[in-house]
Length: 175
Ligand code: FES
Ligand code: FES
Image (cartoon, rainbow, N blue to C red; front, side, top):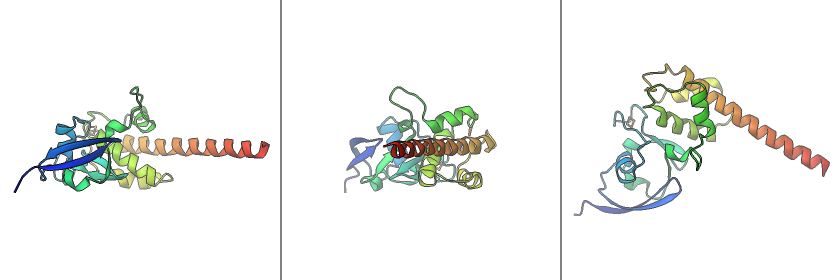
């Protein structure tokens, strides 16, 4: 029996053909085979959430998945957030504005957790955000600033959406 399997992974919109052991975790493949070291590895037991990525838009622990399991999925890592010239996404900017990080080790996991959550729950309340971020571990911030950052990002996205709707409505009424 061979211990190498050919897999095709789609990560951050790019296709990668890899020959890997079926026992290799998604976290290890992202970091060591694809060089996407933004995905951090802490506990390797599904506890800390530092390795959180999006699998078909859902936050998932990359240390608990074998890469071969996600062959037909779209994977997004923290590297997908910034713009082409390195400009921060709105979520990253909110983490910066609210000091939602100190050492930064946990940050990629929190960013991807929040990115997936806000896409699904754009009207999330502060209490709901607090509950969701409790699934990842941070030893530095005390969580308050992370909740502030995610809550602010949710508000900013709602404001952008509302402004777009208002513009559309105004254009419709003057047509
Ligand atoms: S490294 Fe995956 S949950 Fe901790
Ligand atoms: S900022 Fe250090 S562990 Fe969260």
